[in-house]
Length: 213
Image 1 (cartoon, rainbow, N blue to C red):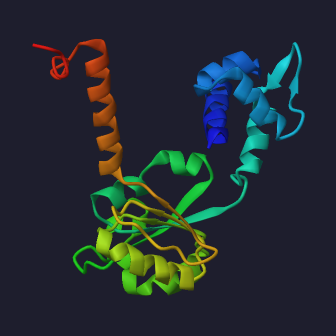
Image 2 (image 1 turned 30 degrees about the vertical axis):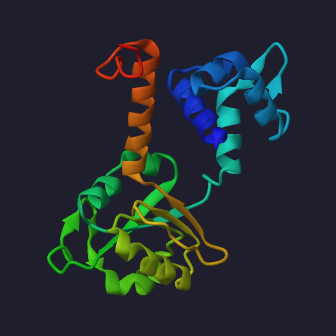
Image 3 (image 1 turned 45 degrees about the horizontal axis):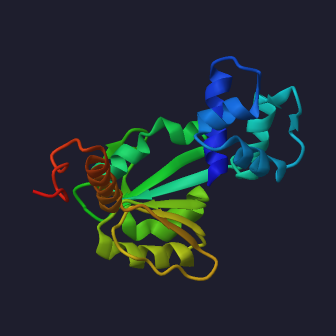
């Protein structure tokens, strides 16, 4: 979603003390074409003035509201392994309105341990934790086979937004949005583009492939 790119660029400009920006500068910072940016922002309403540009903080606030970032997003992380712990400590969540309220795991050796400000609770308490902490987003940092049952449990508990790092296709019940992040697939895509770049530029260890002897 390009709105998130615009918001990231606007927040960076705001941090630098920039009060107004042009579509050209904002488009370059966001990595998109200026015409596409102007079209996207026109759908949000009239937030730019010809010859003057955009008020950085005002536009950032409006995009945040459009994305729902002005709401209280209460996050549950399921999985207290290396990935789950790393996610729980990510400072970018809080600054963008996402607050990690609880962490669960089924491993008795991890239950009861403190991770930052959280104490890991038993995954068997999932329904109670969702109700108690008013969870509205869940993050799954669990092995692939565990993901589908957890999605079903979370849906039954009323959680409608789930981010899964499990490398498995997940069937989402009606009304539940599941976003899947497969890190191995992303690395494969990067590897593919690296190979293509080597072949096209004639550089790198694979540059000789495809050439005539």
